[in-house]
Length: 353
Ligand code: NAP
Image 1 (cartoon, rainbow, N blue to C red):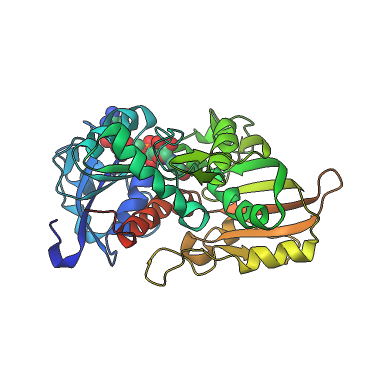
Image 2 (cartoon, rainbow, N blue to C red; image 1 turned 90 degrees about the horizontal axis):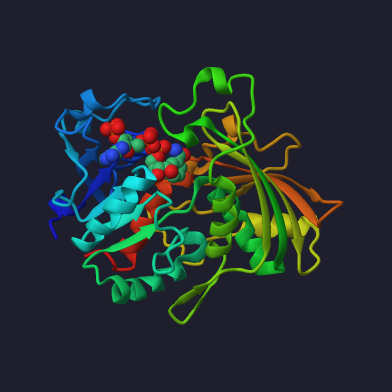
């Protein structure tokens, strides 16, 4: 493996988009990874990154990427790990080609999330699902591998659901999301459509929330992932917020739990595989807020450098058992930084070659 300055060379596919720019920002100065290639569509390829990309993050474009030439999305990139932030149709076509060519592919896209041979991973929730990679190798015979991150909204409630499920067992979940416009990519929705408005439909989102959360909280039986059997009803809405998805949750539990007990297990939750050495993993993945009007996306999406899920308004539910509100940073924990953490986990587990 080419490890310039002892760092692992990595590439970003879809590097000019909303999530791709986050990857570039995070990888420009990562302690383990060196950004060696950026790739995007034909529209951008062979241009300087600074010319191809309409940079829209608040912090300036990192100097080290400005002069890099944007390359086409095809194997041959100078990297061991590729982070995919491609549109789903392109991801479906290209991610297996990279895995076949020997790359470690950490995808943000939904293309293979529900493939029974592809782990969908949040390290604090289900790192043991990496065992699926053995089956992936047998079934697909790739020299490399492919893992995915879940949908950004799903990430925002799967993290708090995990310790609650472990302690009390989930029976039913109602999840209503209010999702930021950056979740639709760049340039996304027109201002005239979203300003002063709520759009009560996001294509495919409710199905992803319902299916991916059961996969994430599922268990390994031999080489198979068995989905968790709670029932989840999702409703998703697009709201005029720039970044940060808010999810209102009502839960029915198998065992009785007081509000105090729920707060305690959420506050104490730590990754079962926590290693002080994973640079992007927060010490505590959940931040419990006690104020009556928190969490709020503008104030709380940055918690833990965008990696903590903020949970508040934990109180009894007169229909089910308990209700609460969570906020997640959709392009950090819910997308690019979640995938970078997945790559760090693969490195720590000795799975990147
Ligand atoms: P986006 O802003 O539209 O960016 C898409 C990127 O893919 C751009 O770099 C674009 O390059 C490139 N691209 C488009 N068509 C291509 C093609 N035919 N061949 C090669 N490259 C192509 O989208 P996004 O929001 O970053 O989302 C990227 C992926 O992440 C999607 O699958 C999305 O579902 C997923 N995701 C998004 C979020 C979020 O919060 N936004 C969260 C989780 C997951 P050009 O600039 O050259 O067109």
